[in-house]
Amino acid sequence: MSKLIVVLGATGGQGGSIVESFLKLPGWRVRGLTRNASSGKAKALSARGVEVVEANTDDQASLEKAFHGASAIFAFTNYYDYFFQLGPEKSMARELEQGSNLARAAATVPNLERYVWSTLPNTDLVSKGNAVVPHFQGKANVDLFIKENLPDLYEKTTFVMFTIFAANLSLYEIFRPIYLSGAKKWVQFYPVHPDTPYPSIGDHQVNSGIFVQGVIENPPPPGTYVKCQVEELTIGSFLAAWGRASGLSPEPNSTTVVQLPMNQYVDIWGEMGEEQASQWRFFQYLKDAQIDPAKVEGYRIVEGKDILSDQAKAALVLTEEGMRTMDWSSYRSTN
Image (cartoon, rainbow, N blue to C red):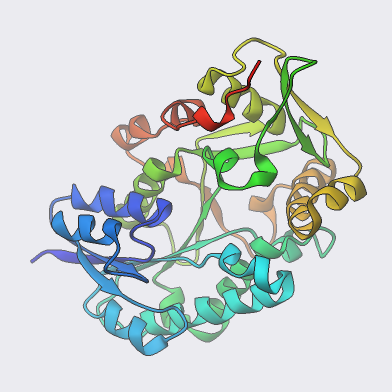
């Protein structure tokens, strides 16, 4: 008898990637959860054999119904669904509320084998409160809720940490490179040094599914954190990869990351600037303090590639390769 995986956000990048992986996998059925089963993307999934179901992360009862019969569940929340309206503190509280609803609903599934929760590092724990990142911490607080309140579910849970997407430059205006015609260069502004580490999952629309399939087929011990990363870049090398992949700035030294004082970065970008600055502070803190999160007490972290087969590793799409598949036509300079 085939097993059932239930995937949150089935029409999005992370969820859609997992749907794609399991549609190809013999012995599995896919139920995709979405907020709007009438959308074009949802109908396209249904036509391919996905059972498309509407569910609301604010409604635990709807989630329990949607999770019924699942052998595996992939779940996540989106901090930025609320950040621009609510700000960081209320958005973290919203994530905890929704993540708790998801976890409590998953805990009611009697034959559940694996709960895969998409999270991010507990920056409060790792940095001892010195570099807290709200859009990381909201998810990490859900981890603690599961561990402290749902011990049976915790025994079935794997925490996956997706690193930075190759598509980031197209997702938010704050990351968009700017062309300086006088200098003939594409530049980005950051509040940290261009050598700051920039861990990348590559093409998340492909690689998310590969990593989650690996977690379900070869599950690590309960409560393990799986770092889903294909390569360790820097802020500067990430921008250079974009320049080559887009064809807009392929020559060496034709892209530049300009480091601004933290207060100027926040003045330019406002609340989003402060939110992103917190992330770069955390990365810089880890580098300066020489902290390896995998060695922090209370964390069991493994590299995602270490649980993948050789065939799965070969299928991973690196950052620059993923960028080549994206449409950068709106970035064309008039030069």
